[in-house]
Image (cartoon, rainbow, N blue to C red; front, side, top):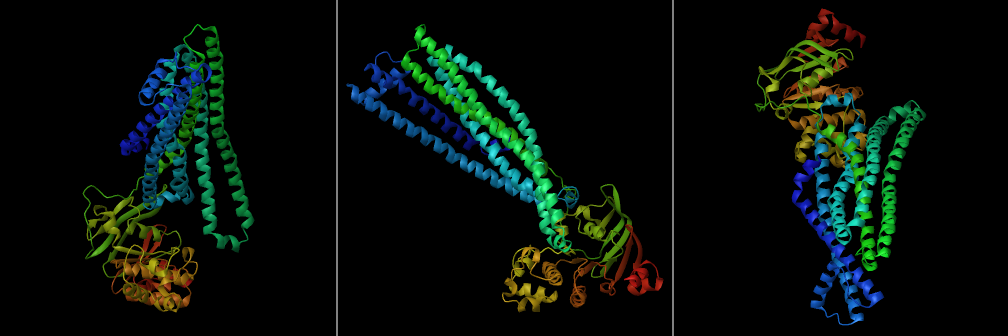
Length: 588
């Protein structure tokens, strides 16, 4: 991820680097002004300046005469202010360029994560919670911004400053600077050990945050059940336990993170004190070319090292902390979809004969769900899938729409294995009405036109086909009525008829109704039955139902039990056999 970041923004990062070099050089020249200023202040002369200070003052003297003490001091102060202004302008320029880099990188990363989230294989959520996916897509992204990107920015700035400052300090007095260099590895070793601990704690922190958010999401989705069973106290106790675990880990991460700056600053100040003692001894002994004025400049510049050393240390710690978030994001983006286009995938727009399940078996997580299923769905016919809960009806529908690929056997579309077709093209052949109706917090119009832009006239026709038009028109805002979160403003039957209208508008050749009447009263069921009978004249319909009254007019009823097809035929044929279907009917 870091390599891709540097590659994409190489020239902008180079600009940030060069502006930082300019910033450091201007800072050095600003501190160069200290020596001549102190000499003028205490000795009244510019004689005996160090070569660098003498060079700078000679260049200034070409522009402005330095023929008296007062003018010289004013010129030095004005030059220092001007240099200080320019250094801060360079610093702002660096931040201005980096702002685009950070914002654009996060914009692209969020898009990638969301695109991945909406294309995850369905099986992913049998092992992982939705809360964990949200944590990776939102919280881990923020963590990358606050730690990794900030660290990279510091790595572009502070090493440059440190090298330039050290180079100038060695130029002033190499013996004194050697002591400073010898003290630095100690600081880096201590901060490095802290960073290692921080990365390990941060990984646990991200995982526990995902568990906590998953529980919150689950609670909000199941409020009706929680209220109905007076389970608020139990839900709260579980949240409090998870929150306590998260709190303890979060506290540990914060304490380790907050230790980096004060520890590095303490080590930096300690280094300054050592340099003061050694440098002061050299000045007083007069065994070195280090004058008192130059030593003041040296100390002023040496104190500037504390900030980049501290920043590098904290950036290293932050980067290690952010690596945990980056690892989780990389894992998320690396999840492979088990249903993908082959290299020579074919386009498909429809079919002319049938869809045939040939000896299809399917297992997930080592559990057999379907075994040796043979079933034909002729074009223009209605096929009903019935059987007890867990018989494999919904799984069969998922395989039909290629949400999963079969474990054994094959599904054929007009005799061609569906794995040969482009996934997106193949799925356009189907419109789904699920038992778990999902309406978004939006208008009825936008919920019906989801993924299928249409005119109001087309939406109205779809609503009429689903027997929901009259109800919608009775609402004050009609099709612009907002249905609330997950369609809470509508009844179960109304939500499902809106979902049917959405499927009708898609104009797909095959309509899949997965328990489409599960939440409906008798009147709503009758309306849906009328809709299905009308739609079956124009579509191929695959219907999954517990209410057997809705499937009696199907062209073929397929009875599943234990993942196997045990009977097939019309309602009359199956009732005459008095087998599994007959038992389901008389027991319903």
